[in-house]
Picture 1: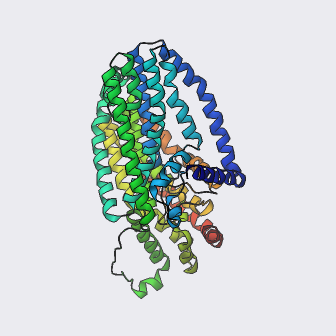
Picture 2: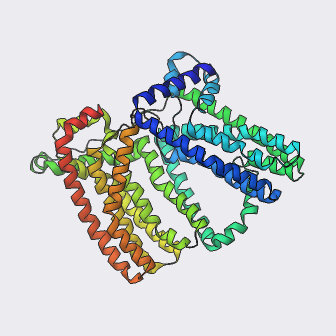
Picture 3: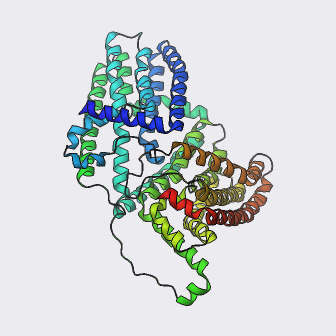
Length: 528
């Protein structure tokens, strides 16, 4: 079964590369990048071998923890990163998940990130090659354990996230947990900002010592414990790592088996509501307004019922907080980073809607058949995001000003956040009608990678990103002047962000509506 699944993965990859030139180009670029990084990794490991055991332990444990953490969080925060074989395709084969799991795990190694991670996992062998044979042997044993831990973390977390997002109650629980995590992250940001770069570096040994006993750092800390003569601690860490891997395997098999016999529902639990019928006179007098309201209402339901939207929400809201925390820990001006949190989050939310039409799928025919005006479709989709994103961006901008202790710059932070949100949504109103690309179907794994979408995805994301940067440049420049040159410009930044943002958003809705009117039949053909 292992050989069969690996051959299947290789065959799918071969056909995909033949059909999609962009995927082949990306793979070549990824391979070249990995090869270019290898000399640095090897040189760093050889340099560590000449340092003390303590320094090697601190660097290897912290870096290894970041690697495992990346495999854990990135597939959840960035939809479309999971390129594993879809377990639901095997539902009719009559094969149990226990038989499929080994093959799926080995097939997961057939990717550039997995191969590069494997090379990085074996790199510590060079760092410990000057030590005794026991340390070297333990480093060799822990390397594959680290790779398997990364893969299992990715698979288990994406499977759990997909399962949780498919149920209404689970989505509500996830929202509460996400809010709690964001609240708990605030003290961490404050602590990092108060320490500064030098203070944070002084805490690295303590942090490495703690991380060495966590599942993320166990495979990297065991050889370092053996190097300093702590044989009991090294074997204990090795045993805990093996136990953790076995626990992940059991959890993953259980999730796979559940997906085989009971795949996630398409929209969670049914929620029946009374239809809010609009007066016939209102429908006749203001058909465009009624259509915009209907699109907005359906869009709001997407944000609470569609797992694909919830997955995008995690990436748009949680990822900026994590990135700001990491950047604040290594720069000399953490206050400036905290002040930009609202604008950063506004950018990810607004830009994230640049492919909004594609999520309708074949249901988009309702818009075409009902002759929904282009501006009404654009306005409704924009409002569905704006009504909840604007308060969130306002709150986050004020929190950023509070964390930085620069309340005089709060107007600039709010102006930046509002201006970037409106600018991103304006660009998305045009791009979603101009450059749609395939996304997972309703009910499918929201984290799965879509075949045949690499070229269109790259073009759409690149164009929309550059357009967003150009549109948001004026308010961004004013914010930079307020922050670094003259803080009295904060009020001007607020006015430009509010007024300019509204005007930009209105222009985006009008222009996007014209593009929509001219491309609606072709959009339907592409989505169908």
